[in-house]
Length: 553
Image 1 (cartoon, rainbow, N blue to C red):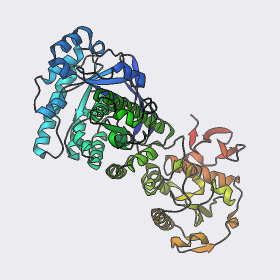
Image 2: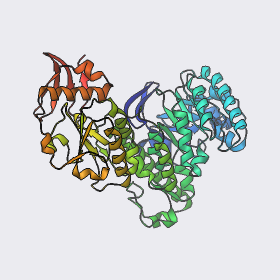
Image 3: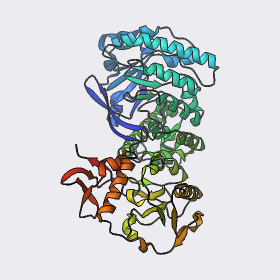
C-alpha cells in the first residue's frame, strides 16, 4: 500500500507500508555489498537511513552467505532491522552479459531469504543500442515480469521499465509493466546516462515512463545516487533511489556535495558541517591511511546524501520544490539541460493548485511553471464586461492598492509580469496574490505582458490602458488616474460578479451561473469575503489562505 501525503510538481511525500511498517518516501537506499561492509547498515540507520539495498545474486553465489541468509534471513545477515531491498543480478547481467541464475529462481530466492522488496531479473538495455535489440530486450523483460509476479508471496516486488533511449519504447514498456500486479515500479538502464551527464536524455526516459505508470505505486530510479539529481528526479515523479556512489566515489577520493563532486586533493575548506567535516580538516583526511580516508569520505557522502533527501522532502511539504530544482540545475550546465528539458513536459495535472508557500519568480524559467500555464489556460473561463481596463502591477492586494473593483461595465485587470493578465475578480485565488518577484523585469516578462495583453484585449469593445503601460503597444484610451473606476466593492451586483468569476475560474465556464446566481456574501474582519449564501442558506466559504471556494455539502 502506498499512501500519498503531500505533493509538489510531480514530486510526492508518500508512506509505503511494508509488513506492517510504514516507510516514508522519497527514500534513499545505500547499496550494501554483503561481502564487504566498511560502514555497517545499523550505523547507517543512526544517520537517518530507513533502508538499504543489497544484491541477492551475490548472496546466492557465495555458499557461506547463501546458507546464512537462508537459515536466518537477509536482515540477520546484514545485522539490520530496517527495510532491506534486494536486487536480482541485473547489474551483473549488464556488466558481464550473463548470470548463472534463472529469472523465476532469483525471485524465489529473494522471497526465501526474507527480502522486504525484491526485483525481477530484467534485461538491462544500455543507451544507444539499436531499436531491434532494445525491443527484443523489452519483450523478454515483459515475459519475465509476467512469470515473476505470481511468485512474490508476501514480498513486495519491483518491476523494471527498460527501453534504452527510445521514448516511445519506454512508454510501451511502462504500459506493460504498469499493467501487472507489481508493488513498486522501477526505471532501469539509466546509469550510463547519469555517468555521462546526459541529463536531457535522462529526463526524456523518466518522463516517458512515468506518465504511463500507475500513480498509486512508488517509482524507483535505479542507480540515481548523487544528491545533485534528487530534486529533479523527485520533481519528475521518482520516489526511491539507491546509492553506491557514496562508496565508489570515496574509494576514488571524491567528495560529494549537492552541487556536484569535488576531489579531496583540491579541497581547502570542507563546505559542510556534518560530523566528519566539522571534526576534521581536508589536510587531516588526506593524511589518513587509505582505509581511514575512504571511511571518512564514505561517511560524509552518506550524510550529505540523506541531508539532500530531507531538503527535498521539506521543499515538497512547503511547495518550493521547483525553486530547489532550479537552484540545483544552475550548478552544472548539463544539469541545466535536464531542467530545461523537464520544463517542456506538461505536469499541470500533477501539480497541486494550491500550496502553503508563495510562488517565487526566480527567472524566466519560472514563466514555464505549471502555475502560470494553469492560470493562462483558465483566463478564458471568466466572463468579461464591455470595457477592459488595464492597470500596472502594484502592491497586493491590487483592489486595495488602487481602491477599485470590477463591475459589469469595467473589467479591470492587472498587467502582471508573472501571470500575464490578472482579472481583479480572481486576484485572491492562489497564487495570483501569493507571489513575489524582483522589481526589475526580464525580457521574457515583457514579452509575456505584451502577448497576453494583446490576446486578452481582442474580445473587448473598448480598451482603457494606464499610461504606464504604453510600452505594451495596445491601442486604446489612455488614462493616468485609476480612481475614476472606484466603486463599492460590497455592492451586491459587484459581489455576485466576483463570486461568479471565482466559480468559473475554479470549476469551469458556466459554474458561476449554476452556483452563484443571486449569491450574497458575509465579510470577514480582514475585509475579504468569508461566507457565501443563497438566500439564508450557506452554499460556500471562501478560504482565507488561497481564495478558493469550498462548497457546502
